[in-house]
Image (cartoon, rainbow, N blue to C red; front, side):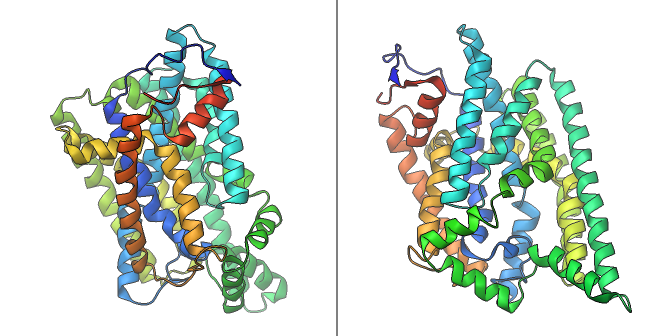
Length: 416
């Protein structure tokens, strides 16, 4: 790569609201991802699978399910769609090859994502964002209303996909429990529910794997989990694309830039939470009442929540805009964490895998779900502490600089 010809030029002015919302999102994502770092993957959805030691752990799951799970990922997807559109618009305004820049950005993001998945952490989301982002680029010329309509259709498709799978779970469970169901039906049901429950022998294997060496973990990802990034695209791509389109609509309409009147943001927040919070509370009550049985868990936590989630994501974004409108030292640090979101996301994976996996401190499976908040809070503090001083001296976070340089085929200026 050659040196950038505009090495002395400052980057375009930032849209502060986008950075603030992105900062909240990248911090919030860790509150859910911490379960994936520290416990067997089944515990991410089912608190009874692992990490459950008492009422505090159920309370932690309830809070996360109602207010965090899927909402921070959706918020991050909103911001990804808005940023994607912004990059294309700015490239076009400067007469640069916008389409080429966009697809190179997504191609390099896919490379980052796959490397992250196979060699650092299997909960990667970048390998999903990259191909979905390529598709989202085809929608950039649509009006905000058209983007919202397309997003609504995609959310409905996602609901139907998960609804169909929920029916399959109920059918398989009933077949296995039926008199004379046979060994084949029982084996099929055991395999289907393996992503949600952890039998004692499977728990022992999981603990041995992630408390073991680095090579064994990588071999597992390159073997049993080799196709997971592509499976995720098929099963979760619809909703992810919907959120990116909503983010693009939010940028075009001024919602994500702080351009709306405060009263309008307040209405969006109140309405969104009034619709979604009771719906999520009802879903949580039904899941707990049914004892976290897998068919009900899948039907409610995957399928039903698809319809309840978008209003809360919009409400959360509106609430963040309202609460941070006056700025302040904390808001500046949150915005800096958002500007360095790519570095914070990947850096968190590096730190957490060293903390929990066997090639580091080996704490995998040692903490309960509630105790994991004792790791999340210091990690949030670290994001807030390092991001602003770094960006006061440098134009980009380390991984942001690397991604930008690779996508543009030239080393980008780093120091201010």
